[in-house]
Each structure stands twice: as C-alpha cells, then as structure tokens.
Image 1 (tube, rainbow, N blue to C red):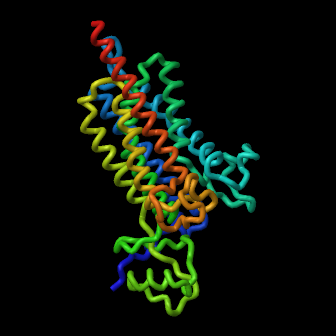
Image 2 (spheres, helix red, strand yellow; image 1 turned 90 degrees about the vertical axis):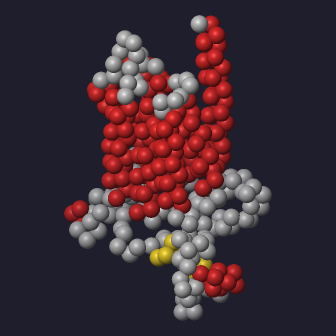
Image 3 (cartoon, rainbow, N blue to C red; image 1 turned 180 degrees about the vertical axis):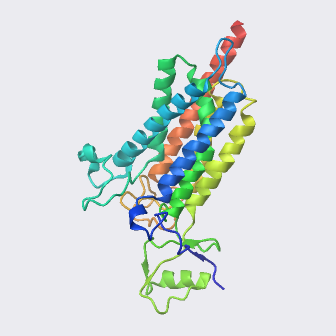
Length: 324
C-alpha cells in the first residue's frame, strides 16, 4: 500500500503545453487574473453594503476600480522588487533594470518569475495610502474593505504555485504527501532514505536517486491563509469596533497562519534558515522549532505590527468616545 501521492502528470505550468503558439499562457498568470477579479467582486459587494460610504459621500464604481487598480499595480511592483531584494541571490539586485525583464538569458519568455508576498503586501499598502491621500478618502475604512477581499483572491495565487509544482513543503510520511517532480532527490543508498521509503511503501530498489513525498504546503496556505482567513474577516466585517480592525486582523491572522505553515514548507535552498539553533540543520525536514525561515521572520514582524497598531487605534477610539 502506497502512503503517498504522485504529482499529477497531466499538470503543466502551461495551459496548452502541446501548442507552441499558446505556450506563453500559464496557469500561474491565469490564477492572478482570477485573484484580481474575485477581489474586485468582493470589494464591490462590500461597497454595496455601505462600508465605504460616509454621511456626505457614496462610493462609486469608478472609485472602486481606481482604488483596486492602484493597489494591484503597487502590489505587483512590490512583489517583484521584494522577491529580488529578499530572496534572489543571483545578483539581480545589482542589475535592477532586469527585475521587470520577462525573458531569460536565452531569450525565452519566463514572465515575472519570482514574486514575494511580503513585498507585495508592502507595495499594495503603499498604493492604497497614496490613493486615499490623493482622493481624500479615510485610509483605514478603505483598507478594511480591501483586506476583506484579499484572502479569497490570495487562494488562487497559492493554487497557481501548486500548478507550477513550486514552493512545496518538507518531506513527510503523511498519506497526502506528494512527490513533486522538481524536488530535491536523495541517494537510495542512504540509510535514513531507505527507512523513510519503507514507511511509505515506496520501492527504491531499482533507482539511484529517490524523490520523496512532500507536504503540499501551497494547498495548506491556500486553505488557511486564503479561505479560512477570508471567512473569519467576512463574518467580522459588520461587527468591527474601529476602522482598521479588519486590516489588522488580516495582517495578524496571515502572519500567524503563515508562521506555523512555514514549519511544513521547505525554505529557499539558496537562503536556508535565517535563524537556526543548528546552522547545519537540513531544510528538507524540520529538526527544531527554533529554526526560523525568512518567511517566519517577516510574519513575526507582521504580527507585532498588527498587535501594536491595534492597541494604538483602540486607545485612540476610546479617547475619541470619551471626549464625545
């Protein structure tokens, strides 16, 4: 009995892998389209509920489109720049004019490969601040509406990572572990590899290098950081105590979910752990809860930001209520 799953052979990064003239169409890019459209529809629904209206102003559809478009542009800029600065050790930060160049050295189209969530978070935040300042709209009110819409759209991004066969997790003996084609292979002669294969019923007698099953961490993130977080914020949207509460719930909630899931997701090979109890600890398995990845450090900062800002806004709200 096999206690693992093989990555579906029919899944390819290209939507039409056998049609050369359509090879530029990729699932990952299509998932971004789904994400942005879904986020816009949710934002429109929230606007119809009156969440963006004031006593003297009613949000228009043009406002919504302009707001989300600005956020998306800055999100993409931040995601690409963040990926180059934080994760890319190939030296692209020394040649910034190549950050947005969608071709490799051989002239093959790659798209904007490499996007950082945290870079996108900061970029999108800057975009919303600029838009609200320019249009003289209350930032936290509009930010709450946007962050209610973001998680369900984010789900599609992680599904795109799964379809690309990237950002997979550490090796696992769980029955839902998946053998990803691009994952690191291990020598079949290593004793722990033999033991691991025996536990999951994998026959490695006729192979030199073994591709072991991994946690589908992309799907963990799609579920918890996307669907679950969306449902939490969605059901809290009409019960918030102050403007900004939903935004900070999102930042803190994402930070907590991602921090935990990072224990199941394999860190980038080129970077490894940023903080480690044992500097020689392998990244393909979790040997200590005190080994922290780049993502965990950034998520911890998000959590601290969310908690601190929530306290400040809550104190400000109570002070205003007292003065009234």
